[in-house]
Length: 159
Image 1 (cartoon, one colour):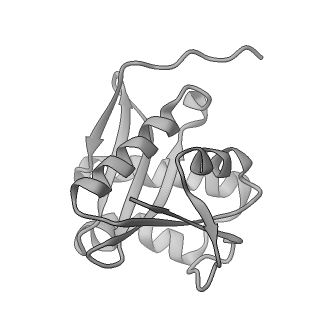
Image 2: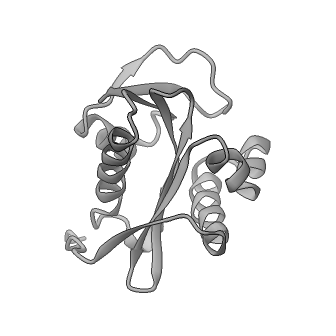
């Protein structure tokens, strides 16, 4: 399969309530494909404003034309630390730099709000995601506690 071209017309837009179904759809899709939608996932995806925004976090989307192609969230853990959470790209847009653009935006946004560190939890089965995180300077650290049964790796990036 030939490489798909980069999509220069990716616009990163902030969460608004009308996009909540897209946030849930994109994340449920990859969770069901690779793992399962855990109770904590279902709860967080059904109440994104409560779990992400009310405590000082953020949710953003990659929009291509009128399509919502991807998303990510940042959970505020402290004034200087945020967790990258629920990053997902629609399958029809994968391989076209959407994940790169989302991650670049997440890093830049976190810096702009004074974060000093971004952490994330993932699974080593998701090799493309792990490769992307490493490419952007995330390094593996001891996993500690995770809210997700599927997590087997924790990474951080010092900003």
